[in-house]
Length: 96
Image (tube, rainbow, N blue to C red; front, side, top):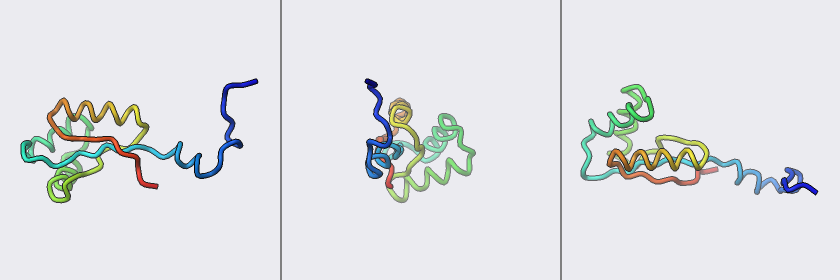
């Protein structure tokens, strides 16, 4: 007997849920300067200046922006890093 779960034992909805990635959402706050948020996105994520500025403006104007997508563990590490930079961030399940 094996301890692994075979894919044919799962229905399609379950497979979609298991494979669905997670997002890192950075939230707007009244503390950090826009230039600092851009700097963090460039430094930590390696975004080009233009992309970092676009994401920063989305945070500023819409109140939040998705800055990374992937498996939950990696996204949780990114959130911890954002907190280390003083930014508000959370991990949320990606929309289907």
